[in-house]
Length: 425
Image 1 (cartoon, rainbow, N blue to C red):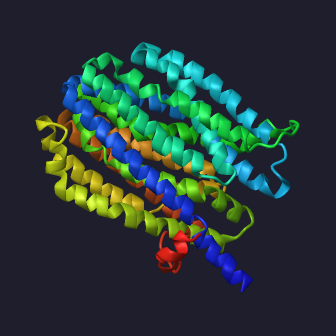
Image 2: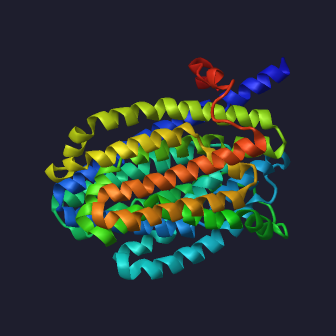
Image 3: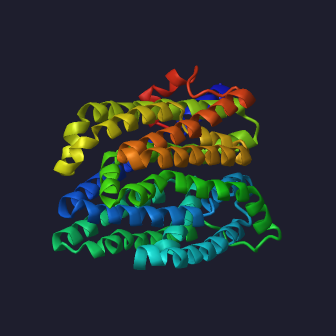
């Protein structure tokens, strides 16, 4: 009986956290969608495209500067629960200091290209790392409330205010200011959970020995997520960048849903694989995958069918991007069917393989972008992005199958569909 309860818990454990994360992801995606509508309706395509390119550069730089320290903290904090989180405050300090330094350097580098909004880079980085630390303690509430709700809502309100004023130059500032309260509240959340303990020698070395390969991979991932907008702006102009951003805005639905479920089960996956409990890891992976598919496939099918009408919401000039939306929808359906495959791979300790996979994906995207964007604009960009996404998901899927026999669907899929037991977890 005890074994049955434990096995049921493996599937049901991420239930409430996963549901809350996906709900926050849905809210965030909606807020970001409305934000894009506000910007494209209030400003010209050139002004909107310039704003989208600037925010993409800032988020890429922040993604690099994070050094994936957040995931490193989740790994060490989750493993430290068995001995009362002794020395965890040292791990947090060891994670934050290099990130602050790199973020400040990145801010100086991008300032000539993005302006004063570069100052928000260290704030974004610190807030993200501290929120990750709270997830290591097994709670999703700070991430759900701050990153999933407060941040996108505040950005939407401030950007809408700028749109009413009609001053495009203030758009980046309105978008960046909400990161400040998020950082303050995230720091308060960590402080309330970290026990006071002396710094243990070797803490920083252990953290960065584990995290270093993922630091590079995290930077590559940040580039992969947003380089397409920047490349379109450079090769085809800001107007095409605005069209591309509008047509692909719904891709954030899949990204945020996947991120929400991954955040909810990441600590459990690390613990299960650290203890050699492959069956439990399989249950978690399959449970998260089936819910990811159920939650996102209806969105992609509807988006593909309604794309001409939906894109018209952004303005008359955006309705012609329906083919971009169709490629996006099909690609995201394949990607979500693979589940949080890279999270599983890194939780198993294969950070080097994850890095190589990401490099291959970025290389594929850039090669296709350079070849296709000059002639096809936004459609060429989505083709490049699609190629990279397929590489990014199918390579680790094959690696997990070869090494561990893990699949995104299996005998635990049906168990995960029992909503009553999932919601009660």
